[in-house]
Image (cartoon, rainbow, N blue to C red):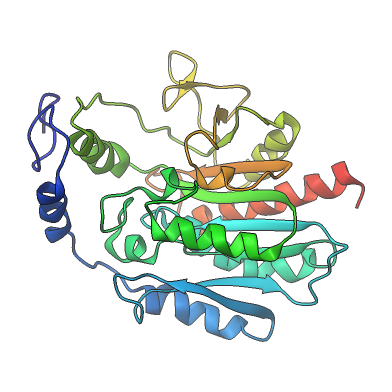
Length: 308
């Protein structure tokens, strides 16, 4: 690949049409099983949590049912917390970190919070290890009205059915080497723009909301994760993925403007985690543990801040 034409599908400076999207989809293959890796792990949790099927992807409704788990004894007097994983299906620890949190920690926190957890928002993306859905649409840029991504639309509808305010939303993601090797070149090709190489941060970081940054909340999460994995340093320009850091390991995005999952509610406390699984310093289990530490660090901070 090169900077002038870094991706094998499409024509330089020309956005993809349906033909290029079809060619892209044709070369995507299944690489792992949503049934085996996710649904099978959720089954033993039935009874400990309320399992809610909130849709099924039209690509294959039998293969891709969408599930979320709710804590039992839902109480309108308790604040409600939303945890999401697998919005980008290729980001493995987002999915398995969410499931690990459900199994190991969620019941303890249910004494203070209602918890709604959607561990794998994009199961087709999970199986194909992909950032997009089959229509070459990024679900994590599609959380807005009349969404072009059915993964995003289904989750938004689920949250709307709760008919309650969301106090906090923790969205679990990863930044991987494939972001620069595959996904950003593909994005540039799809949109008909030049691919400008970037740098993958070595370590954990957070993306807060430019319009509601909550710096103390973000710091509490960074401090909780620090005991599990290393925090990403800024590059030589003081940035992470092209954005200036606001404090150690934290950058901000305008989450609603960009249609990010973390901006789908009007929550008081919102964040997007970014684990780096390709670091030689971490194991797969440590990546999952970092996601769990991020959630528990967030909830422990909220307990203190809200006096619960």
